[in-house]
Length: 544
Image (tube, rainbow, N blue to C red; front, top):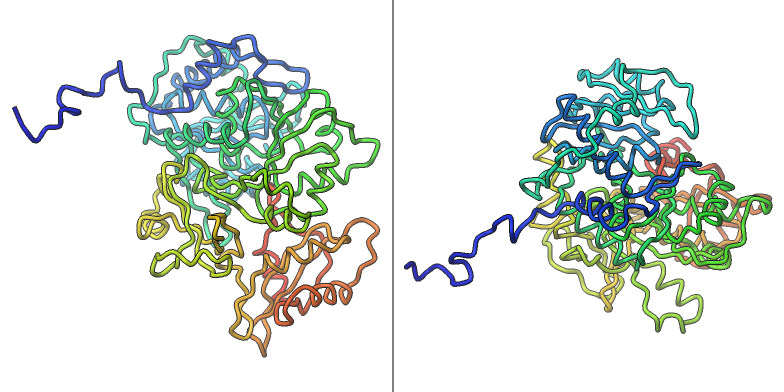
């Protein structure tokens, strides 16, 4: 007998009795077994229970297999937050394929690039987006089978692009289709593309293991009870809806679909469906708070609201609390399945004065339970920066909820994982209690006269002005200083504040060299997920 073989290994092998690959697909199977009659999806007047949801996902998988879809084939979808998007999150990987969800705001050229880069075999597309998808298909090299979705609740008159209808395809499938967990939990489950503001977007590959763990971490982080009701304001194409399409099955929750973000519809659904949770960018908060009084509803329950991007200003947090929402700040990137950092609030902070609470809430926080390590490191030496809340470093991630890598881009993958860490490109600080706070993107830091200026620091000050609704600060070229801060500001309705007023306000709260030299009032350009497009503002600033 080999003495080198551990007794904890000898004769103790992985078998079907003691091992199964981790995959979020198992969550839906369990929910259908245990809660088959519980409402899984609400869409207009439609109500779908978990038993039906599971059968439809299996039908979709069966139909895709009949269309020739096999393991590691790509199925692309151009869908809003409608039931087929949820079905695709299960049905596509049940067929062994990889789900590629596309941003519905993309132009034809970018859609065509993604279809080609992903080697799309089947495309499921909503008739609302027929015009741009038709243009993209004409530009693309691939020729996928096209399945058109016609929304029975909110009919669209867009042209049919393929010979197949989504509902017909689903009904053609076998509700008892025999799917299986992946042979390897490292197998790809989805493909998501970065924004591509500095060139072609990169394809971020998620695996079953990471999706399984992040979905569970969402439930833990959000303290979701059994049968929560979740409103889909966050686009499901964005990091697979932060993995919440899978999270809800864990607790047999209800997905409340939202085809379009409209204030009255949101308020009505929150009140009438007793929504308990939702996620979204700060623009969703503004949309809710700024709705006309006759569209708002009085809530008799607290709604947990999870937001990312810039931390909401103190005035917005106060207004949301008054309206019935408890806001929690998250942080993450496409490469880490969406949110992987949470501002975990401590009870003792409730006793702090409002300004100190606001300082605590402005921090991004600590790692998710599914993330192995979160650090602020010197980007060159990879040594930890001092935990003093002042020394800048790059925020880095390590663990099971970091992407497999970038599709067909080994150079970018190697660069992103240099030194055994995922390099986020975000600059931040770490405090003595281990909580991190972002200060800027490395590309957004403003270097003026040799001094590093955080655009986020200036934005935080401007957000404290009562007339400011939204703000973004970028670098503007300057002959003397190299570059200086330039602020683009959206004012609240009926506000009378001028440029000199805001510059003076900044001067009261910032060092002189950090004060913006120029303030532009405008509607800020935003992505479909509500993020402000700073690259567009940098171009405007250069032209001023």
